[in-house]
Amino acid sequence: MKHHKLVVVSVTLLLNIFAAVTTAAQGERASDALALEQQGRFADAAQAWRAVTRQNPKDAGAFASLGVDLAKQEKYVEAAKAYRRALSLDPKLSGIQLNLGLAEFKQGHFDAAIVPFSRALTQDPQNSQARTLLGMSYYGAHRFADAVKPLRLATDSDPANSQLRQMLAQSCLSAKQYDCALEQFKTILEQDPDSAAGHILLGEALDGLQKTPEAIAEFQAAAKIAPREPDVHFGLGYLYWKSKQYDDAKKAFEVELALDPTHALALAYLGDIALKNGDVDRAATLLEESLQHKKDLRIAYFDLGAVRMAQKNYPAALEALKRAVQLDPTQPDAHYRLGRVYRALGKTAEAEAEFAATKSLHQKADAAVVLERAVTQPTAH
Image 1 (tube, helix red, strand yellow):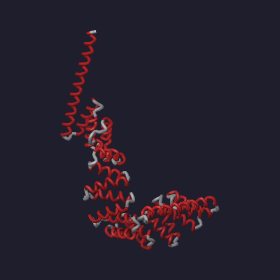
Image 2 (image 1 turned 180 degrees about the horizontal axis):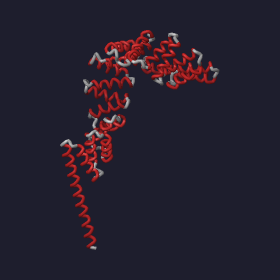
Image 3 (image 1 turned 90 degrees about the horizontal axis):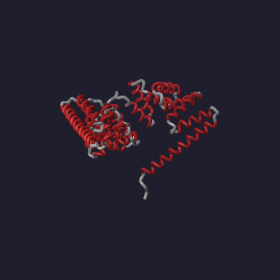
Image 4 (image 1 turned 120 degrees about the vertical axis):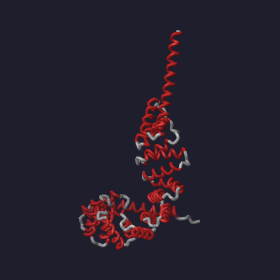
């Protein structure tokens, strides 16, 4: 019995000695890794941290340090993996959510960066870097409405940062927060009056607020500053077209085509103007050419339907208008024309279905206008 106890004590002693030696070895490797980091030898430091994690797979700090050294080498995929391992072991590890977000952000994984940046901001609400990067990640992920608040706060903290203000302005514009966009674009133009992009985007914001004449003036300014800027003449032409100033629109679209003969939208809108002017053959040529360059232009299919109807080519009109409806089922005009084609082909049931869809969509649109007026207009007392 005494011999057995002696064996147990010896084994326990050996285990304690082994643990002490192991801990000492880990401490030595960690010290080596830190020394290598100070020398800028990040690849060697990463190898040292890997050795520590192999000895102790539950050492969250070692995985976090490994991630830092991998990130220093721009090995962001491996760094993100190391950071996630560290956080799985210790979710409250300081600074690692931010590092993980950065590793994803630098790979262009904006959606993946959002969660760690959000958590970093929750851990430290005053962390301006986390807030700015969160806003930029929302912007990169095209979640523009979500981007507005953090980008606004970031811009307020750094008002001279034109890149952040551009992101904020474009986020407001894409989220249809036109007053916000208007405010930001005006500030951009105060800082740089000769910014063609600033005039264009301010014009888009004004157009969103239904201030079309003011929008036209901004696009005219942009065209004067940068006459060869892609899309500036098309944008100006579109605003003229929207205002039914078709002669001015035609000139602007032709200028755009002189710069880019394959500009599908300019071709399509020129085709629409030709159709409005009764030049059916010219309209057909322009509309077909526009679809050679871009296959999903609703206006081109919609107008081609009208062209084929005028030519009494009802099967071709049917095909074009079906495609127009497929591209945007919410617009009643294509349903109505499609109904007329079905009626011309003697397909009464299909025609009635399209006319019913037309009526329903008009009713929904009218209801939406009434609701918008009720929300935006002050209540009478």
